[in-house]
Length: 335
Image (cartoon, rainbow, N blue to C red):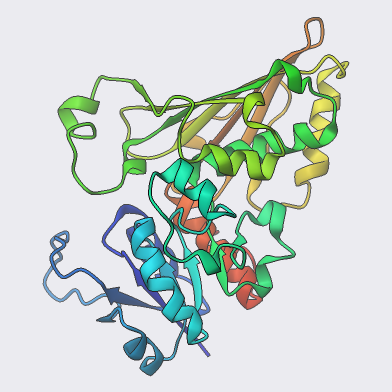
């Protein structure tokens, strides 16, 4: 029997991808939850109906037998909506940063706002399946990782865990993202004339996704330098990560580190040493592609990780987490 799942924020870029993925999912029926009546939508052809719509209130969701709700909303909206849903036994998969960090103090430092649902911070499960797969099935509140940290942690964590890199030399992550990462709300910075034929850096050293990388990778803040950059395309993230590893003698050792970490992972694809992915390899997929090049003579290494920021970086990973929470095939609706 199909399970009813709701989507709040279905008009945003991540929400649109959620609707598309869930509409082809073999186990669920998506229901659109109206939270803002003043949002514009794309024109639809005559006869188009789409999924059922109801109000984004707990009573309506209970009446519709909704078992899980995706919140593709800003953090402050997720903090408002999540607690009453959780109190009624509805699972919540939050795509915002509201519940990713473990303390209110850390949240306030990086998001520049107070946290209004502190009691749920320690209860939330951080939903990076390749790291927390054992914890995800029992989650009531699933905090979906940020797009930048998803690629960064999948690339960096195996290196740190190997103990073979020079952490004192630092790790530099040069991350480029398509414009959809800024969301659908219009702004001067993301308007066409500002973005096209342009390339700009932002949130240098203080991007709100940095603490997620530190939390999962095990790095200290002083060991990690992160710069986000806006590129003139609609979707995709490509991160070029620089490190030093005098303890590694050849590229095959690095290859073994990644193969050991991701041998059985359905959504991580590894490239041969010296071969790296590009954005087109991953756009509109739930894959994270990882390649590297290593110079044994100097101990310098570069890892390139690529994802689609709206799929593996948001909607696709959220569905991957839902599959684990309900005991379905992890790849359901995603391949």
